[in-house]
Length: 184
Image 1: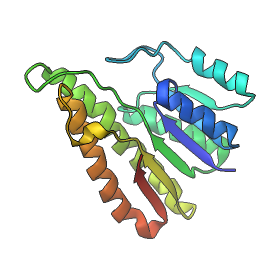
Image 2: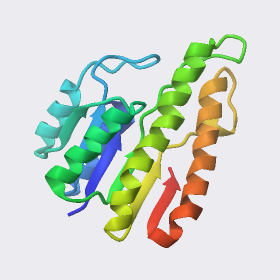
Image 3: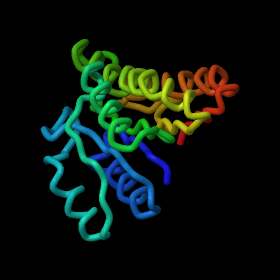
Image 4: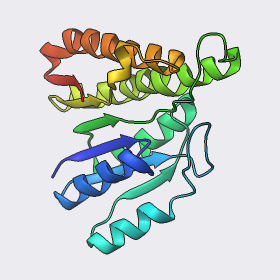
């Protein structure tokens, strides 16, 4: 049975990914923030827990910030301690406030990159040694068509474009480690 971590796995698309993976029999460790973030309507973990219960499956649901090294390390340590390995990672956590270069303030721009790009980097960087030691694994980074540019989404588009480039670099770098890296 595979062990898979899902970032931003507690709401929206991430919630669907978490529940679907659990239904397929995987051990899933899903994490996110309980408090709503900029551009998010997420309200705690109750919806995820209810959907898991209704589906008759379980997942570990943790509160952690994907842009925090300490939080990411805590999630990975929890996963390895509980399940002994990590076979998959879905980097789904993202925020996407609307705005142009002129209307997006510097703090919001930085936060988008912290969550969308730095979060993918930190989680991948922390998970990869475990995958490599166990003979390989799979990383799926959630992209967006906005990664090629979209009106009124300057920072989000830039962050998703960075995900494409980061994913390609990771795929080349870890091919011989038997770690597949893809953008979905």
